[in-house]
Image (tube, helix red, strand yellow):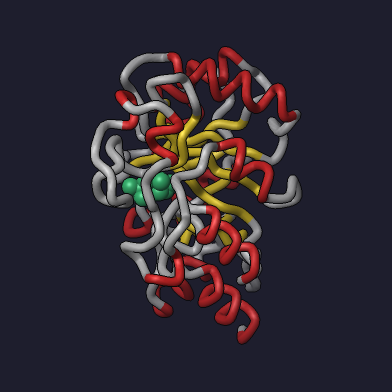
Length: 244
Ligand code: G3P
Ligand code: MG
C-alpha cells in the first residue's frame, strides 16, 4: 500500500547545515526544496516577535542576555552566524516579519511559541498574522497547550498544533477533547506509530513528528504515512523521497 508523501519541513531552517533560526538557514531550506519551515518565537523587551529557540541569545550569538530584557536593536547588534561557520558571519537574529518577508506564502510556516512569560506574545502573534493576511498556511504550535488554545479562541481562523515529548495515552482522543479545533499533533518522532497516524487521520488531524534526521529514521517515519516531517536536513529528506 502506498503512503502519502510527507511535507518536508525544515527545522529552525536547514539547521543541520546553517545557523539555526537565521535567514540563511531558512533560505537554505528553501533552496533544498522544503515545503514548510519550523521556527521558534520569543518577545523582546520592546514587543518585537523574535525568532530564536532559547529564551536567551547566549548560545546562538556572541551576545548575552534574556530576549525579554533586550530591545530589538540590542539583539540585532550581535552576530548569529559566525559560531556555525565563518561564511555565516553577519547573520543576525531575525524578526518574525523578516522571515515572513523571505518565505513565500506557498510554504507552510510552523510558528512554535516558546515564550510563556505571559499572554502578550499570543496577542502579538495573532495581530501579526492578521495584518499579514497569513493565517492560512501557518500552524501555531507549542508545548504549552493552554497557550495554543487561547490563540485559537483569540483567532478562530488560526491553525493550532500540540507539541509533546512524552507518551500520551490516546493523542488523537486528547486533541479531540479540546473545546476548540486542533489542527495537528507534533510528537517527538519516537512516539509515532501507525495507530497514532490512523487515529489522527480519522479525525482529520495532521501529524508532524520532530526532529527526524537519520536516513533510516526518515524512511521509517515516512512509511508510517505522517503528514509532514520536521528535519534539520530537508535536502536529505528530499533525496530519500526522490529515490523511492
Ligand atoms: O517544533 C518541533 C521542535 O522544534 C520542538 O522542539 O526544542 O526543537 O523547539 P525544539
Ligand atoms: Mg521548535
